[in-house]
Length: 258
Image (tube, rainbow, N blue to C red; front, side, top):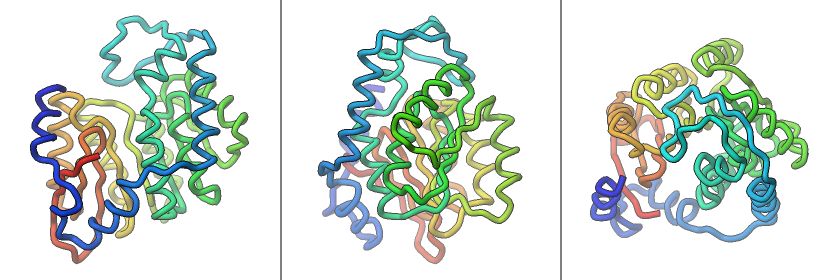
């Protein structure tokens, strides 16, 4: 990812390069600020607890696998370090959730549930749905949700290839206000999950894609998502890509420093 990152650094702009009032406001008021919050210290303490626990589990990996471990036997410390998003991004997701106030949040890829808690703490009144294919990580995520008293999180176990269509059928006319795609980091599943969720996107919906430069496959998927006719605005922060569906707005793609 070194070469894509260097290219990103050369292309990435700041607030002065943004001509869209919507994106300028979002970037200066939500994306860039990173102040403290009591919720952050609670989640950080939980993260540290996982790192120092010494526990190991057998992981069922249904996605693209890990770049740092060939074994399915992994410590919680290893999972937190390599699979969970760093706190900087959790705080970003928290701010985005506080800003947009989504009624329904869907997360594809729970892992240990640390990132899930940023969504849940940001908007306790929201319906939080999170999906995970590995039963052992989902079990530990459930423990973390109980410790955090985040009882409004609905955890759905099983292969997301199966559980996502089944869950979407139950939503009926419910809009997906915020979706975080962090499950199968491959081209075909990423696009398929996007297209399955797309009919449930409203004008104010926000889709967040993790690791858009993780591989050539993910970058190709990201480019196709950007080109979809329903997508009007995208923000590329290298580690994550943010997608909007604002009707009547000119199609624009922003690459911004984070």
